[in-house]
Length: 140
Image (cartoon, rainbow, N blue to C red; front, side, top):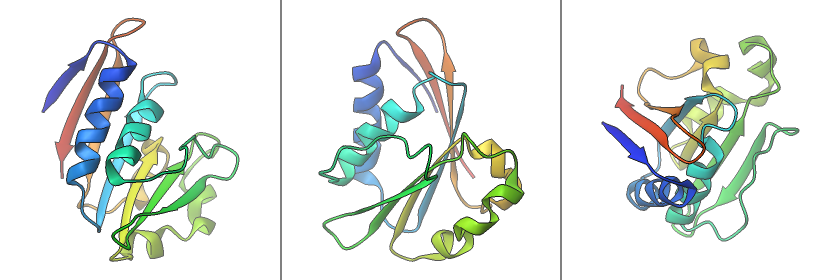
């Protein structure tokens, strides 16, 4: 599926709509350049999940957890600062991916491509203009 958003509000609203529908044991891998809309999308997604806290990229800590009212946990990983998958091994990814209550969203997923579960949703963000983004969603 391919969607063009005309501004950051539309990107966030798309994320929110997807967040409303997400169930535990779901992994979303986000791909795209810096400024392509990954964090904006993710903020909307968190809102759709019912996360009340402000969601910002955990760039310096790599991982943040947010409890969701239904008892599940939203894990937000931002891997911008890692060099390769070896740098991510100490984050406990296997346990997070295997958690039956987890909804996992990974920014800069390309950095751990070999560690990602085969069953996931890949979301690609392409910068079209200052405001417009092309967002491509592929189920694996």
